[in-house]
Amino acid sequence: MSRTAAASTGADDEAHRADAGDEAHRADAADLVPYAVGSVGMGIWSTVPGLLLLYFLTHTLGVPPFLAGLALLLPKVVDTLVHPLLGTLSDRHARRSGNRLGLLRTGLSLAVALVAMFTVPPGLTGASAALWVGGWFLAGNLLYGCFQVPYLTTPSDLRIGYHERTRVFMFRMLFLTFGLLGAGVAAPALVESGARDDYTVMALALGACMLATCAVGVTGVRRLTARCGFRVPEGGGGHTTGRGDIAAVLRDRDFRAMVLSYLFTGTTTHLFLAALPFYTEYVFEDSGLTALFMGAFLGPAVIAGPVWLRVSRRIGKQRGLLLSQAAFTLGSLGLLVGKALGAGPTVAVVALLGAAFAGLQLFAFSMVPDAVAAAEARGAAAAGAYTGVWTATEAAGTAVGPYVYSAVLAVGGFVSTTEGHTVAQSDTALTALLTGFTVVPALLMAIAFLLQRRCALDGPSGADAVRARR
Image 1 (tube, rainbow, N blue to C red):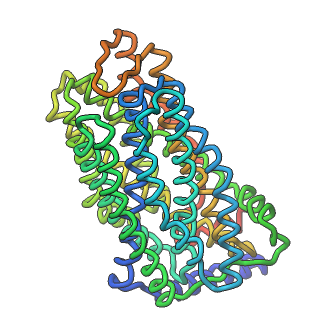
Image 2: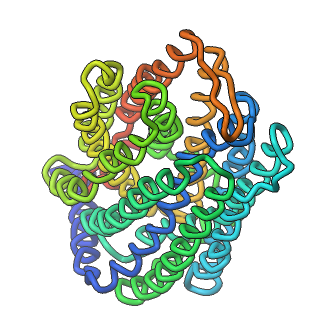
Image 3: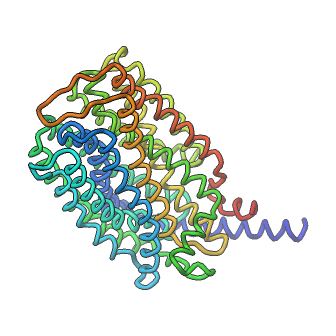
């Protein structure tokens, strides 16, 4: 055996032993549950604005679709720029104090923004209402970032291995699903009348739940890091500034592929949320089906999460993610014939999309700590910077998705209305409404699939493969 081969084998053996040692740090369910409970509150924020804001603006506040899309897009543009900075700020705090709790506690004020966003003063309609909602949406997104970035960095901080990171995210995904499902069913049910006061009541109820569960999540982060250990983010290697940390992250080829893929994935899933109320009202002519379809979309994730975890152990996260993306693409096209199939079969198609959605979330998010681990194997990594760039991508997807759908509606000539009024839509508007909910998401997810195939990071020894290739 050559000296180079022997050295490579020795390095691989050392990496495998290190990974096995990290796997010995296994979190108890008693520690994982409080941590994962924080995802309930995150699920509420992820669901309610994405599901209701576009509909609220165009059907209750009389905001034209294009302007409504801008009111949702512009705050997210700012959000996208801020998240990487929050990541580096979190890294700096972790280097000084050995934890990321400061930003987490700041994020607990998010409930105030949720209530204010849906409590629009009576005299505001049209452009002025869009400005009010957009302003509070911006504030809420910034507070959400303060919580989300350090919270999602936790699995990268823990001294655990490849499969255990997936297990941590599986718990997180399970409780995130509870938040998504609860909010996705309760929110449209509470505002079915379309009255402004009902939106305020809905926001108060879900805001209280969000505050309580996020507070539990902060406690869970503290307990989890105490049990599994905390990796202080690297501060050397010439990347001590926030700009340097972000630049180092963007040079990571595999992570870039993951980020670009998730941008299209997030755009697709949030387009689905924004478009669903339009689909049920104008295709099925029954807005009450929104809650049912949301339940069908999110309910399977409770079962699918553990199933996807087993899939990950058999075929790896990368293949599991590609499988989820392919399933979502096919399911989106299946909704084209939803009206002809009827509500029952369409619920089954939506359930397939929900199972795929669970895989999209579990595999994508659990690969972020793997990218951090691979960067550490190359010499240095700033986990908060990686998470900041990732959550910035997620924020972009949450904005672009509704905006794309609102643009499709605007091109089709969709006409907005105000509380208590109905407007007959043209055939062109109805065609745009349906195409934007089916064909457009399928195309976007197909692009995500192609981008994800460029990522070569997978498996417990993925860091070794990346290091050898480079």
